Image (tube, rainbow over all chains, first blue to last red; front, side, top):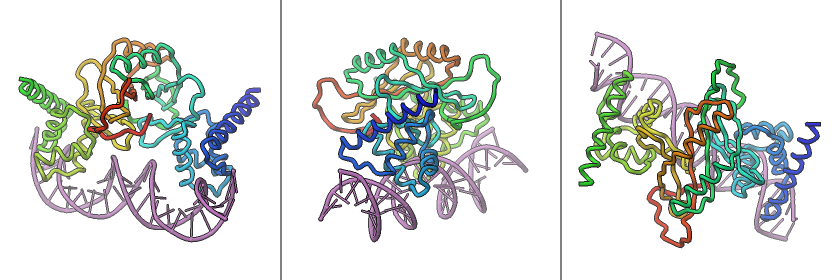
Length: 163
Length: 163
DNA sequence: GTAACTGCAAAGAATTTGCAGTCGC
DNA sequence: GCGACTGCAAATTCTTTGCAGTTAC
């Protein structure tokens, strides 16, 4: 049942991306559809290499240059969000349709948690206003260590370097 | 009078950095002293190339590799903060001794404003706790456009690309 | 039909590193 | 004196780009 829900959501995201492309006069090529699907089905925050790998499983002929170009386009079109978690590379995920979430990076094992907080959203807006600005974007990452932990050390999303 | 104050502060920052180096068993070379001075005297957020340029004005023989190495060391030692404002390069500034400030990037002209907000600090900590983490670091940037503006377009700190 | 897109390989930009010589402690 | 540090140039890593052929609309 979970899987069905996921597939449905992913399919919805794919068509959302396809529509966004067509709206902006971009052509919907097989490669873009594949990358859209890969991103829609991802629940983590893959970097370019990782997206390339997953896309290659679907079409082994896809080129990494195309992945770079497509991710850049999707990013500009606000279809996806680009993140920088402190290791050198950019990471991507499908953009929120509503609301806005941020990330907490577990310094112990590299896990990335997502969270959303209305109060936080308000404060950010308020601070910007107080400085005389309209908030048009923002970026927040928290870096933390598990409370009272001495736990495992796996690193499903690699390690970060910025504290 | 302002200038005197600045020089005093810069001198204090330089010796603080020197002490931190010695504390950690790092050698205090001329190059490191120069880079410490450059950073201490900067009120903006220079990138490596810029630090290199300013350091070169003091000692034209300094190498950019040394600047890279030194900035990395200072960063690890928590003497300085590294930032990423969305253009490709890293930017640096002397770390806060107390408190913690963040940045608002003016999307219109690239200006970078600094701000501090106690309420914000609390929320971040609280969110981390709710997720089961002790907050050990964080990063926040706001991107904004001036309210009711159609103003100038200078870019003293270059332009950013992330919204 | 044609402008946009792709793959490939080469170019670019930012940063790191190997090595031989130098210098702080 | 010795290990840490520096300068230099070459190497790495991530990302972009020029070009010739292909494809979506």
